[in-house]
Length: 149
Image 1 (tube, helix red, strand yellow):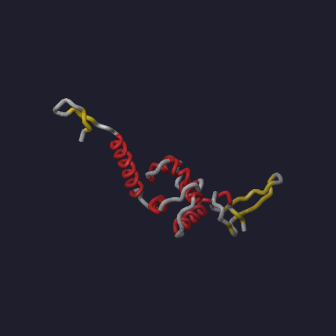
Image 2 (cartoon, rainbow, N blue to C red):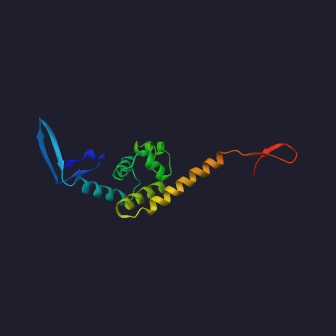
């Protein structure tokens, strides 16, 4: 069995489907239908019950062709949060875990509606947060300043 560490996942082993050659004294491995293999690995990741690991988040993000920044914006978290997930510093929360799995399923099989909905929610959340940080004041009838309603 071939330990496929090139996937970025520590627990992937392949039986068959590879050709190993020696080139210039080094072992070179060729994998048949690499895209198909990655699709099956991703499907296995999203179907298993434990919480996603950082390595699995990184694998799924890369399979969707997203940068940490764009992935963070879609999920509605900071880029630092994604970085911390992927480095294993912080566990992925339940809602985010389910959202990531849903995004991957939609990426492969869907029509983009879920992604658009969540991007809209994340955008609105950012706008609301910005509005809440804004401090508004007004002059009252007595000529004194007060916080605006």
